[in-house]
Length: 402
Image (cartoon, helix red, strand yellow):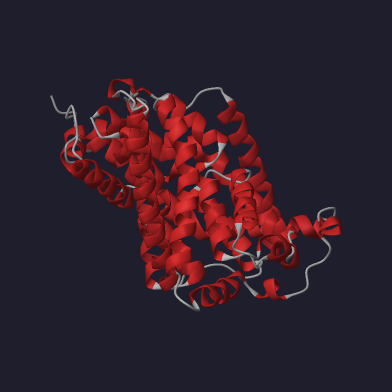
């Protein structure tokens, strides 16, 4: 029996709000780290530690990513900060991949919704992604593209990037230093709030309205006892395509990944979907804003090739070791209790307070930097985001009356 439209509307709105509640503190934490990097870390320091494309620089980029963020939007701004400070493209991309895959809290969410094999796959796959990215970029980076992308990114960040930066030890103890962090933090949110709002709303709609049979049809061979190499390959290609149109972030896409796994999608297909948070439309838009469209599409192609290769290597590696997970172990997203008293509640309260303080502090010191809201694309996104708010608030109102 089909659910009435109003019930599905309420379910989609509640799911949207719940997924965002799960991820908000990670957004705030990532933006805080990114803002501190941009304010306190000098270009000379970054150049000294990460300017060469070698094992040390890539290891440092991966380590900085590991300690920084699990949110793809915040990771994008962090990678840009490192790149504009003088780090090489490969270490900056290693930072970006590590900050969305090699993080503890993401592994915890995967353990909750999926199985331990996916937790291992997330970390092993994150390392494979970095290694394959390194190989691909070394072999294919067009001459002059890195230089032009760096100039574009510095222009986008504003004039302060070209000025002398005070000693970070003095700046980190000063009120002015933290005011600069507050302004950066607010600016990062200002650049991506529309993409975030639309992305999470779409996620809720898909979770409530799209039947599971659709995903089984989309991923060829789903539910079969054994899959051919070509079926596994197709699923690893469909995973990024599905994620491209159903983006909900590296934290929020795990429940949908569990739905896919529970419907018979292969380990490789699910991991390709999980790894695809950096090859989706909102990320492509932001990368283009940071580096220009040519570099944005180049990075998209590199990440797509790396994630497909990583997913296939892990799938057959796990198969040889007898470690492929059982689909019956998947947990349904509809069984998730979003709002409860746990660590997420206290972290969200802390970052809500921090965000409010930073915004009030920054209001009288607006410097006008950031993405322009006057072009057609931004206006369209603005109205779509407003429509998303209306949809979510309306669904929550319906839910509260039932």
